[in-house]
Structure formats: structure tokens, C-alpha cells
Amino acid sequence: MNSKSKTVSMIGMAYKANKIISGEELLKKTIKENKIKLLIIAEDASNNTKKRFINNAMRHNIPYYIYLTMEDFSRSLGWKNRAVIGITDTNFSDILGKLMCDSNNRI
Image (tube, rainbow, N blue to C red; front, side, top):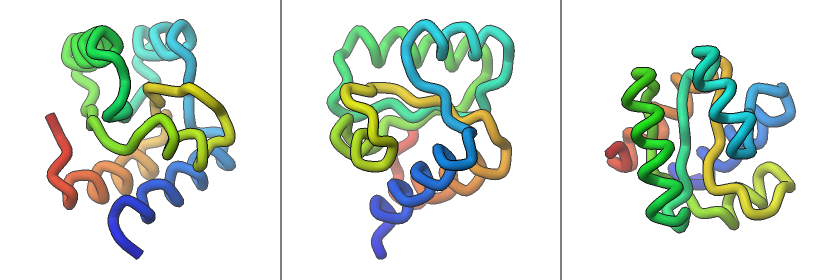
């Protein structure tokens, strides 16, 4: 199993454990509450979305990765058109961060 497949599987597990936040307004609110441990931004997200969430992540000192696609998010979460997801659990964020770091996708 390659790193991308492992990452998609781990996102699915985090979703089943109720440790994922998605949706722009809910994510912004949760970021401000300092509950997000890791942001994952889809590679095919719009430049405006990437810029907004990267700025938010940097402002709140949240690690982020540009990794996977919106289609990958749909497959692992069952939601359509998700460009950004937030991980709220430290253990899941550590594991996902390591998987994505091994793929050299941190910006």
C-alpha cells in the first residue's frame, strides 16, 4: 500500500472516529477555537481557498499539507466537493502528518 492509499485510509478512520471537520464556516470557527491539529488542503482546491486556509493555518500555528484531491476526500469521507479538511485529534494528526511528510507534500 503506497503512502497516498494509507493516507486516504487513515482519513477514513479519522472520519469514522468523528475527528474530522469540514465545511468552510465550520472549519474557520474550529480553527479560531484552536481545536484543529492539522489541515489538509486538496491539490485541486482553488487558489483563493488555498491562500485563505494557508493564512489561517499560519496565523494559528497549525501544520498544513497540500495533498490528495477533492475526489480523494470524497472517496474517504463520502462527501462531495470538499477542498479542505481539519483533523481534531492529535494522534490522527501525528500519523497523517508523518504519512504526508514521507511524501514531501508540506508547504
